[in-house]
Length: 94
Image (cartoon, rainbow, N blue to C red; front, side, top):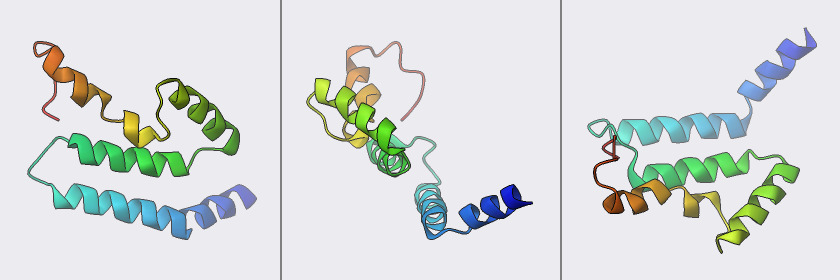
């Protein structure tokens, strides 16, 4: 029963509600486009970064530093940036 209560409290937390609201706005604002594009990937990376455990966040920052980056949002558009170099490999439209 305590696990169920914890899950219900987590589902009703302000942070979870904000995440759901951001996702709904993102999806609803661009219904005609099936692709997320640069902005969508950056938004999702920003949200995901907020949910990292402290130790994981520290390790992610160490990895990002190798590329002189500081956030996941900065590297979330990598596939978009290299697609022009490999036009025959791009499977999606984003």
